[in-house]
Image (spheres, rainbow, N blue to C red):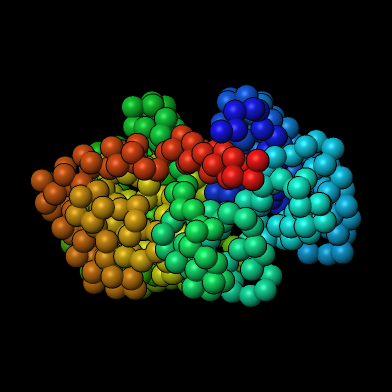
Length: 380
């Protein structure tokens, strides 16, 4: 058994926004707390101060995620760095940095190479560029659906794949941890009346992949019920999709009932303020983080039945899964949850216990470290 303190490098383009960055931050903090040396190599970003505060080291490489010849200079540098610092594990978290990491790793004598791990954080495009993520000695899939994708598209042997679900901070997404001041801030920003109708939240970046049009269509079918819907998420300023959605709202006669307040800086408070949380993605989610966050706060979730949502939601226990692309199915599910108080209570009561057992960052980090130790033992 490997009992010594390890030196672990995580490699990704930047430490700014996004699920991959948060996972890297959480895991780095976990490693440092366990006494291991945690190193993150990236361009940098707003999460770097917190990363360092929590005990990790950060090495800035401005072009590590840039698709240009400038990134190639990091190959010999990384090779030298891994040998000098006696790195035990190199963990690849994104495709272009993975090429840099893999080529540097490959140039090291076999008996001096660190353990090479890669995580598929999503459904990458199927081509030779993405295939680099399947070349690691062990490949982490963040859900069963991603594991199936890896096996089918890259023919990776099952014994090289390990399923480790992404994890959320259960303390951050805890209704009891959110005070009225935070709730008031969200309520004021959204212009909601405290005594108003129930709130249906769709928290997602405003892109066609997230199915906002299906969501709006489903709500138009239950316009007679008392509700207000909030589509909380940023939009691409170069796209006309947001304007198309606003026009659709007007056409359906739902003005002032469906809001687009932009990006939400306090998602835990937004979820607590809401009564129902919806995920209407047209394409399968690799994991379905928002559904897990909502369940952690004991909110019923309605999501399209594909991708990671099938795994993260227990149908008719912590949420309801509906046919992808079907406004009618989604409408029926929302109506059922609104009108059936017993069902609402049942769906709300079981979510957090499921999250605590399967989808916390502690569970994720412990399983990832266990994977390291198990495979380091095999090559020792």
